[in-house]
Image 1 (spheres, rainbow, N blue to C red):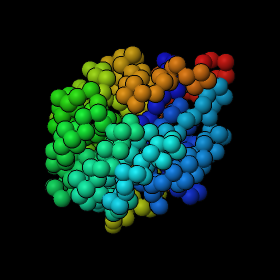
Image 2 (tube, rainbow, N blue to C red):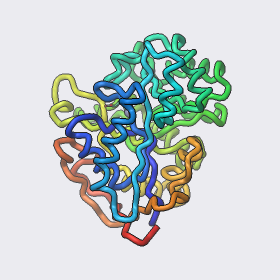
Image 3 (cartoon, rainbow, N blue to C red):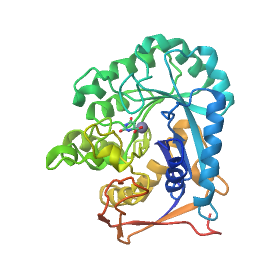
Image 4 (spheres, rainbow, N blue to C red):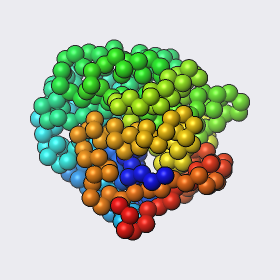
Length: 348
Ligand code: DOR
Ligand code: ZN
């Protein structure tokens, strides 16, 4: 099966020396990606955004297969002290999305937003500038399995207060969030990760403790997974792929205060191919990874971009490496039914 090099609408590439390695793993398989801003320090101003994008573009070069391209789509982090006047310059620097992290909700979110309502003037500016508001939808005060559901009322208020603002519920993990999107307006979408689509909480704590499956939002109940699977296999256009690929060194995961995050960028496409071959079909897969998100964001479709290139998925068994540069990936060591073949020059 040949697809246009797809989009990943939610990915973490970090900072420092590791950035190049994570970028290369991603650019090998994806043509575009929305880059999350929870780096240290965060992406929060035009200069920081441009510098971060330049680093990613440079790092990607060596990993882009001949005949393809890689475009980082940039986001910035909403902070409590941000002003409405900060937004237009970020848009001018190329930002397509703003990311809202409730304070303390996840990795590097200590500087997240404590009182969502205090940011309403900033949301007004996002609406005026046509920037998408991406939300880590969890209330960190709630019980861990209820955090996503507990945050939905905030999203309802935001949608009501800003009738033209586009909003994405990131890494939707519950049946409630799926229903909320289905009941919502066309300007409300959700990303779905491959791990929330294929696994439930049993993969984290059902048998042995599996730190490499620990992420925020935590994997949920089987019925939540089924609701996500149904949303995806039905081909609903407001659900699209965002890996939330979030690498942490093995030692940061296998310790007494383990970091949240699943490293899935290198394995996402074969796992999705397996899912779609049994639950849906090729067209639905192509829409999920290379159409729905682009339409929601108002970007050219991957297949329509000159020089974007293609990726081939073949039904050839592939054993996932135990580690990528010290990070244990999703499905490490297991043999999958599908593998990715890089595009070849000349094919478009
Ligand atoms: O598990 C997660 N890891 N969830 C997030 O929201 C952030 C991410 C990270 O940056 O490690
Ligand atoms: Zn994330």
